[in-house]
Length: 89
Image (cartoon, rainbow, N blue to C red):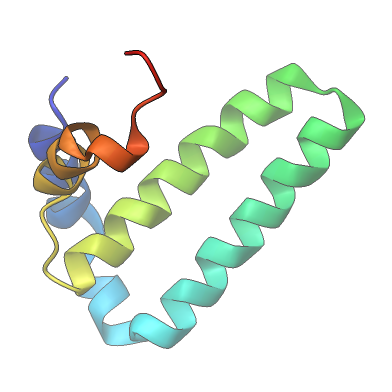
C-alpha cells in the first residue's frame, strides 16, 4: 500500500473525530502510543510491539492530516536528503 493511500484511509475514518478533539489532545494520544511501543520493546514483547507499531503509525498519520502534511512527500524528501544517507552510499 502506498503512503498516500494509507493516509487517505486514516483521514476518511478518523479526521472528523480527531479534528474535533484538536491537535493538542491528539498529540497526547500519539505520545501515549509511543510510550506503549517503548514498553513493549523493553519487555521484548514482539506481538504487542507489532500492535503498537500500527497504533503509532496511524496516530502519526492522523497528526499529519490535522496539520495538512503530505507524508508521501515527507518520506520522499527524507530519502532524497543527502544528510540522511550513510557515507559511501
